Image 1 (cartoon, rainbow, N blue to C red):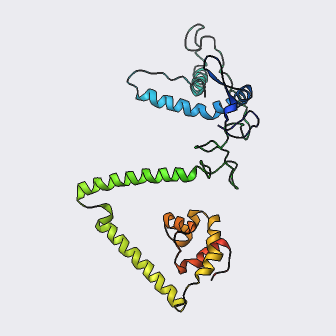
Image 2: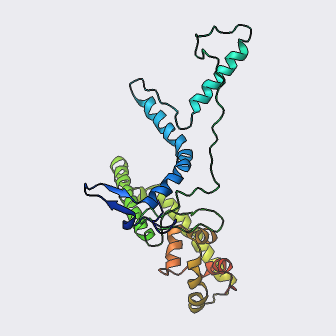
Image 3: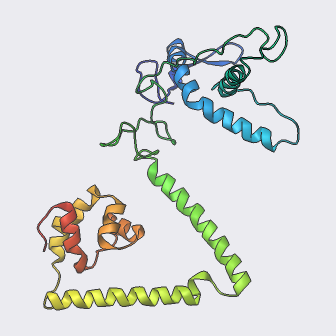
Length: 274
């Protein structure tokens, strides 16, 4: 949630809350007013999700659980359509007053009109780590990511640790079952051999086209390396045909891509190829 007592945009601050003598923490009046204004948008956006989760939990319960539809009123609309259909089919044989599901013959209520704006005041896109505001993407009205520049490296580090732990567990399970690590299997070795062969053939073809000229590392360091920071890992990996891990090493300057890739990188950053 992103709001503030001094501005309608920004993360929550300590000054936005107050603690009374009993130790109860409450939001200030400015925040409560903004929350009240956002409640219709919350109900419209979260109502179907809440009722769907409640229906799934009720269906999994061993007891007979009836889930009301007070948020979306979907059951009310279904019952109303059923009443209209029964009345149309039984026009010659009307029910007696005081009997049946609709003893008074009351017509179904019309659809409730939900006032919603194109961009509700809340929730605002914010970082999941610190709550800072996230700038929207150039081609979208909302942010494309969920983490700010300061929290993203830590998030990636934690994600890499979790993935490595899961990979180690899967590898140990495979070694227990087959007595061979997944990276040492015949399929994995065949993939490595084919990848190395393709890279070697591409290197030889490039050297044959360029007459064995030595690459100009200074040109790469001055023209390409500084401009890679403006490219995404997907763009670099797609243009070079490498993994996003290798693309990350190229962009951070940990590795220099092969000279045969420099022409593709030059086209990406808009400079004349070496």
